[in-house]
Image 1 (cartoon, rainbow, N blue to C red):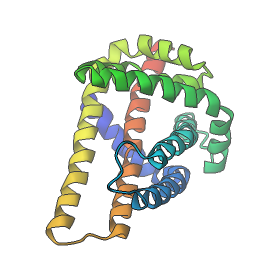
Image 2: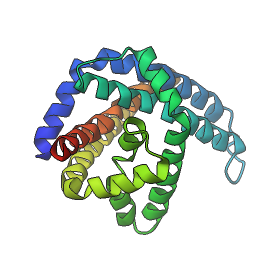
Image 3: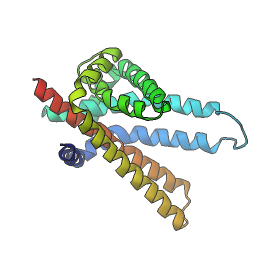
Image 4: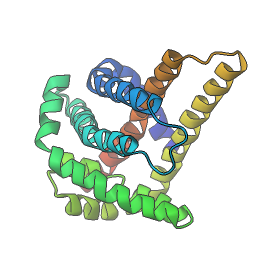
Length: 224
């Protein structure tokens, strides 16, 4: 079924490309500009983690729930045949920002710890908590409730989620590495080009969300 869900993910992405771009690209571009400024100002001889890098990570984490939550709201509105505008989706996301932020933070911390324990535990947690964002945003669950619900509702769809998300990771990461290699081979080393590449592949990360939401919808339809 994973292949079918991947095809449906790509079709949904193409059909709703403009709306998703309106929601996500402004934030991705702003974060990319801030990141470029911060990284270009780093002292290469400084040891340890630069405070500005930590601040950049914090800013990214603060913005992430806003535009990812808005994307979830938009995806759900399309499925219900009542498409939201980008502004309406962002308004809904803003109302759930606190809960989404805590959901991302808690689950993200758990996943990082899992990845440090020989990677496999982190991958397992990534899949089992992959519905937490949807539960939090669409069902207005608290962060812990969303993670608990995700743990229960992903059990039956574990392999579909793992297979599809892994395929997307290999395709997107592989394409990014290939493009970087091509640019390096032909001697293109422009800050603008690198920024555009980061923005493009950063935007493609929404495919992970769309795929997860497709499987989430299958689960929701089966439960109803």
